[in-house]
Length: 443
Image (cartoon, rainbow, N blue to C red; front, side, top):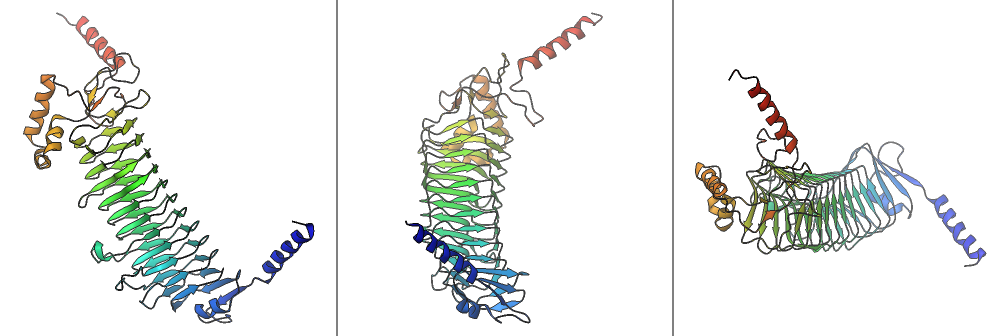
């Protein structure tokens, strides 16, 4: 490109920037009383500032504009279709309270906001009484952040929409949203390489649903009080890191599900107080490292179709059942790089003080093996019969050859019961105290 051409391009950009202006909607001295006329009158690159108030309109943004709410103006839709449709790339929608979409009666994705183009920002909006919250279709590189979305929680899940739904929409960024009362709070469908970061989700069917969306990053979110915290299906190379998944106890009541999900990393998550913490079904060669499983009814349920997964440096503590297998263990590795997992039920010792127990730990108890073959047996999990079965198995010394953590870690346990996994130094100190006491005895 010649210098003259470069100068011409630069002059055009400067001219466009100089011509961009800000339009005011609402209140005294405003350029427009309503938003739709402002959209029609503005030029690409302009900003439309909407002052606080109530506006009853459905809007279509079909040119590159910034639509900014000042003082949280309330935008009520007509109740038919979508309230705001962003059809042009490079737009911003921020600062609005949006209500009153259609309710999907025509099988359409009626939404508070529909994004049909790329490179947009939908940030800092409050959405109430909308069927879908924010929908992104056939578009990429959009930022959906800092929105507060509440679904039609008075309806059954099957009649609600999703909070943030991304369909055939790769490489979009979903961050710091607060979502509750939805069918699927965040749903990536045919939307690879997306990111869901720092969102807070509750009281939905699925906190997050990922289907046919490879290479998704799901990090530092909180998924709580839903039927399923996060449901990952038919996807590969997913990264779930640093999430807190807790109190998901509906039917079926699962914190995290991996269904037909391969080659993924689940690391550094807290999986707490769920009916089932983690369910793995038909999923292979996934790595689970550094996760905390605590206070779950069942921490980990593995089907026989789950093959070649590996667990290391995870902590299982205060769960009613740590692991339940449906069928035999399918080549699961219970250690990574010579390090197994920390088990609250471990009964071995660390004689050489290297932090690794000297004897393997059977990850599935006697009763959990019975439960894996007959789910109805769980009714007796806390019964004296279950305790007796576990005691009999331990006294018999008949340790199953499969599902063994050969390198169980010895760690400080928060539980009051610390009878197992006692380091050698502690044993020596106790023995020394006993000898001193005996030496001072008058006998």
